[in-house]
Image (cartoon, rainbow, N blue to C red; front, side, top):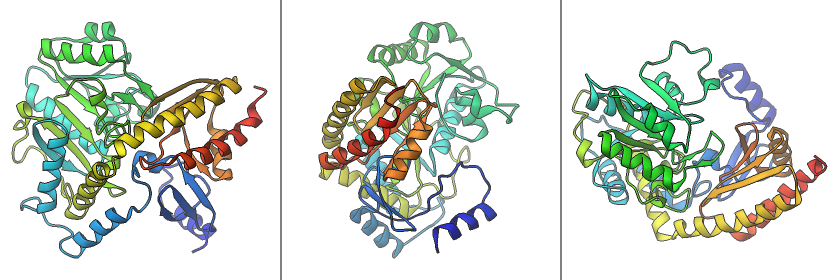
Length: 395
């Protein structure tokens, strides 16, 4: 199909819940993706931190093909090897406990919320989250999200949530009550503008949770699976959560979510209390196992750190040249470029020049390139990016 035909068909039959760019992609390989007209793009958005190994990594494709030829689906009323092996890998990478598999980050966070409520009820059911956070689009995870712009029109929201300022330990202390059962947060707020938690804040939250016997839930849907140069972002801080949620990059491009509950809380959700028909699908789990193996075998955590530092240095040079760049924030290959102007037009112009990036929180450009990125690809992206932002130099 031609690009115009794809767009026309989409607009006719699919609900307009996305503000789509006028381009239809048909093929991807590594850091490159091609549209229906044959134009190539350097993808520094990675499907919103999903394609951490780039597009169509051959080892992931091979794992998918092999498993699809054996078994594509069976009910969770039975056992499968890919699901068991993936759970084992995740627990060895994270902390002792057990895994619940689902299909998305929102579902993983729903599972974490249900676990916390189940553990605390009937006396405790209040959950504290951070302002500017993002935890999903279901009614409950939307309520957990500390951004009112996403909640408008969906009231009444779920009761039992309150929000405090990110990186403000005193505000958090004051908000805790006898009903508080959990604190849920992202170590780095992605949708909120690539806001990075300080070490003091994370350690303080962990200490508070220990003292008050409150669950600490880390939402690592975006930061997990190597994005920050560690397998999980919490490992930068020397603390361990009680519950960890994952999705996005875990499936190598296929949909999967996971909630890891530490050993102390691993038996809170018993048979019949939670479920997911497609959770832990054999094909997706086989792909996920391949993803984790590739990251280890190719030392992509080390590469993410090295390339993240290199990209950050390049962006800091641009910051010194362009007054409308306020700040550069990064952990590994999760980078935010804070502007003092709106960034949407810059994103559009970058796309027209062959570079895919994103703008969040109106004024923060977000770079989320694959973990197997090279210096030459960074140089190419920076060259395109600077050509674009020169138009705004006088601002």
